[in-house]
Length: 248
Ligand code: ADE
Image (cartoon, rainbow, N blue to C red):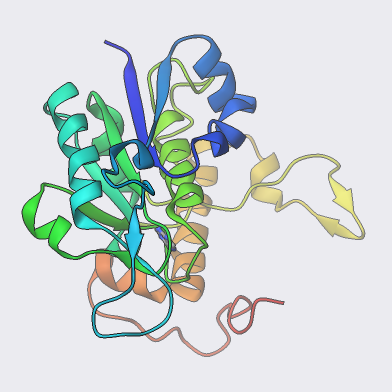
């Protein structure tokens, strides 16, 4: 069976979008995965086909109705039993490469794209829907978040990436950021490629890459360092600290 993504959305026309080009798009064309969209509004029951209502307790915006979403979710669970059902929302658990790997190894996924101020919380209590966030910022809807999730999964599917090893050394696979990359020209604006990478000594190169992965993870992502490697460690003074501070 082909790995299949079912996207429940109010904006099916957003798909495949960027997933229709490059690596994921070629794989989609080649039948290495498949994509279907479901219009949530088709599960509305009233005359106006409404999918949202005002928030209980007051406040800005609208909330997606649990009854309409549950009808869409139930239909999907019945059509695709055993397929994980996720919902993209900034209130979800953070997406990780481990989750991506697990999802890519399965039959596919169903993903509900949140819109408006949010989703009626009772949906999560009453149905096996896992809320997932792609990061601590707020998008205008779950569709772009679903695209991020699908892109991360699709590139891991068998036959999608060119070299089968290219996924194994990359960022997060060992709980670290990946080592930095360089390519020709050997000198650019007075900057040279680290000499060790031109040495041809594969053991030395591997050791250098591991050291840089640890060093860069420590300076850029102390949270990752702590999670995977135990207690935070203060770098000795004079050690590289070039990646701290603002995104400029
Ligand atoms: N919808 C809006 N913001 C989101 C986020 N950060 N992750 C997942 N879905 C979202």
